[in-house]
Image (cartoon, rainbow over all chains, first blue to last red; front, side, top):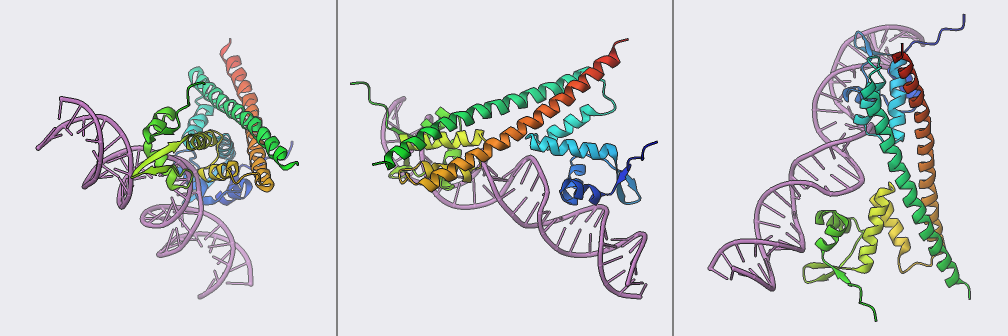
Amino acid sequence: MTAVTQTTYTISDLAREFDITTRTIRFYEEAGLLDPHREGQQRIYSDADRVKLKLILRGKRLGFSLAESRDIIEMYDPSSGNERQLNALLSKIRERREQLNEQMRELQLMQVELDEAEKRCLDAMTP
Amino acid sequence: MTAVTQTTYTISDLAREFDITTRTIRFYEEAGLLDPHREGQQRIYSDADRVKLKLILRGKRLGFSLAESRDIIEMYDPSSGNERQLNALLSKIRERREQLNEQMRELQLMQVELDEAEKRCLDAMTP
DNA sequence: TTTAACGTTGACGTTAACGTAAACCCGAAT
DNA sequence: ATTCGGGTTTACGTTAACGTCAACGTTAAA
């Protein structure tokens, strides 16, 4: 048998690992994104919780709001196998990808303008 | 001669054209992004002002903050010809482009995961 | 036993980018 | 004379995503 991978985490374990504050993690719970098990008062996070957190943070990097990330996480959930939810998820992702493409196009446009500006600038500087 | 292109705009002219509110335009002025001429109380916008506004909105789509857009606009300005400023502008743009690339990579990663999820889902549905 | 490290729950503060509303002025049309 | 469609300022409200205390409990170590 291989080593059993650690199954639970404390709040600051996760905070350290993902370089966020415990306040942030509690906030995600307030927002309905996490719902860790409790041992008395204290929060105990499972591997599943950790994965959720990972998804939230990736969502952030991708420009999703917390609400959107919550939706996405719910779709990934055990209840899953639901075809309509999966489609909703896919379309949300596609939508975001198109936004990004649009941004890329605009950036390229801006680049061209910049290149021209640079050229004009250099031209004006040579005698 | 060809028709002379209109030289001035009222605040709501611009609001209509760019589909934003006049409040927004005034806010950009408060933030130091615009500084239209005045005719008594009223703001009179020149073509140059219009271009600035265009830049601001493009900046927004590209994910720049207003402060960043203000910097960019200042660099485009008449005082221009300054090489250091131009370089600063270019590096700001490059930085943003790298961020976008990063996002694209993450999106692609997410796509792969989604494709797999979809596959698993479909597999589970066929008898 | 007291200090330290870690956890908890409020609850208020913060920033960006506007929205909303009140109260006003002004010129043209009715 | 008043109404209407613009424009103006001032000022408070809003949302998201946390930060920043304060005040407290728990366990382990010195």
